[in-house]
Length: 181
Image (tube, rainbow, N blue to C red):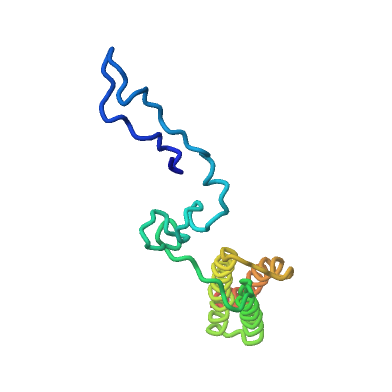
């Protein structure tokens, strides 16, 4: 008897003759396996489905692959610590600072050229920095771990309003200059 649950014995050498005597003295009776669940009662031998194969050697070829798609699995980091992505708050502070400085410069020195430069700095440059903040913050949020301080969320709209208000000072100086032409 074999341990294979699908081995039902060997067939007779020649098929029985219709109406004749059974070959070799009796009817053919297949061998019965002793225990069809014997393999399940053995302790796990590791590998794929308890076959004794190496983990990843799914088809018994001896070639071990780390995952089912043939790609490499990331190695665990040796430090054992995670680093959380943070929002680029420096860009918000830089945008707010540029807008405030541009408004002050436009109010103090109201020449047309300085007012136009101040309007460009408080407008497109500062708002461009806010847009860059949104892009980098979205990328940081898409990372595996993101941690933002509570004050960053209200700082974003405050910086936008501050830039819009600070655009008014150079625009007012430019409008004053154009009105006197």
